Length: 418
Image (cartoon, rainbow, N blue to C red; front, side, top):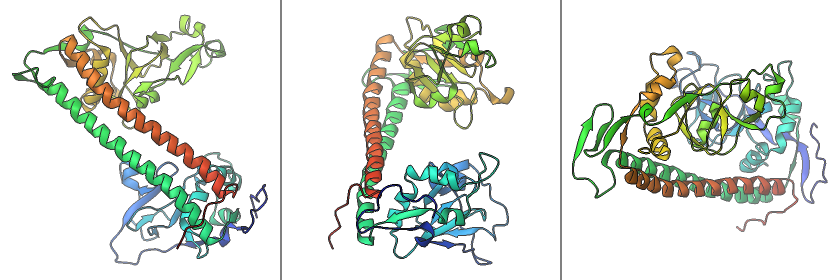
């Protein structure tokens, strides 16, 4: 057996081949049957509809050789097992996966929920990498026989179920927290839309329609962003010059950080020489960064930089606002107008944004006191979201440590009654 346990087998547990704990399947749909949903398997999202993961169908027109996946089945891509892309389907309907995929279910003496937790345990990743072979580091393959060669230490079935119940309870708490986050984010979006189109409640009695902006309070001005703030893009110092990067102390931020909304840490560091001679652009803390180029939904997203940093060439930094504009209000407006900002780059080279386009964006300009009140309202909602996210992270950490203790037998789960 590969991956033999390095710690003693707990009392009452037994070490077996994983192949004795699973039953490979390879069922194909019958000719003439309606084609089910096409599925994929991701290390982050598990078993998921293909068009949801990739935004489109990638499957062949002829799916006669595709494999059926029933609710509760396990799926993995042999070419990506090394990355941890293996999961149990939590979907309520059957689906199809590529014939390249492997599909299996838990054997009769194995609790499927326990097996799912064991397969997703961080300790498994090194084992998956060991049994995956190939010359291309990103295309190492692990057949079902390779996976089956791993060893698993199994407690008796009642204890498997007890362990699964403990871990499921943490997952349920995490799911409830996810629902709170999603609901609060929807509330924030609704509040922001109402504030940007109607102003503070009780402050306005008349409104007007502005082309490209929609309805705003009649007393608000409309401004061109570039007339009230500096807009500047960054650059990346030459990677071929070690003196620009080695032992750097100046924070450097890349476009992927825009997903953080509040950018609290850099991706890497550059040197002072990289700034002075390498053309790097350092912008101040509080700058609003808009991604001008990026994969997926990145282009058009906005974030607030919480420290002085150099930025790469795919960012436009907005800073140095006039005394009529709060950068925090710019961030709120930009997040609410993501689609409008993103679409401003359509028709340009690679559908990219540029500083000139961003400077030309028009936005409502409430009085400064009203901007502050709008920002304060949103800050209170954002604080609730951040609190829920911290709770989610704590639950995730708790599950990881609890799973490690229970799956190795260092801590024994109390058996379920009945």
